[in-house]
Amino acid sequence: MAGALAVVLAGCGSTGAPVGAPPAAAPPAADPAASAVAGAVGGAAVPAALKFTGTTVDGKAFDAATMAGKPTILWFWAPWCATCASEAMSISDLQDEYAGRLNILGIAGMGENKDMHEFVSDLEVGTVPHLDDKPGKLWKKFGITEQSTYVILDRAGQIVTTSYLDDLQLTNKVKSLVA
Image (tube, rainbow, N blue to C red):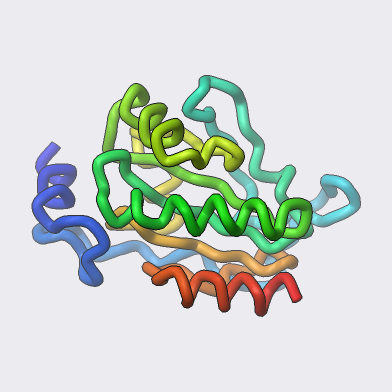
């Protein structure tokens, strides 16, 4: 509870760790030897970064292994975050423009499921799957300490970016990966 309060007090989209938060864990290593796991989904090896499951905000099971073989954006957001809300249009636009060539997965935390539903509906980002990660399991897996953070993986599943990106930076990163 104190950690969540520290994040709220730190504000949306800050560039530093929340006040009082422990140091961020390093994101999963980008070790090529360790990234591919036995098995494949649609012919693509499943990288370590996509070895997780979750539950969508609608209560459906989700397996990230289904995203193997394409560049992927993991968008960590909170339903009360104004910065996250301002990013919704860019996420929707990227989903429309790069459908079939790019995966986007929203990972909601620090809020109630009802509020997550409202965020997705009100900001019209329902074409993107969103996980309810209220317990923070995936936030911890990727070392996320604040909302409005992107984890971007290349086609091989290697993490190439873990940070806040403005709309132009996000678009340029996607163009370089999908090209």
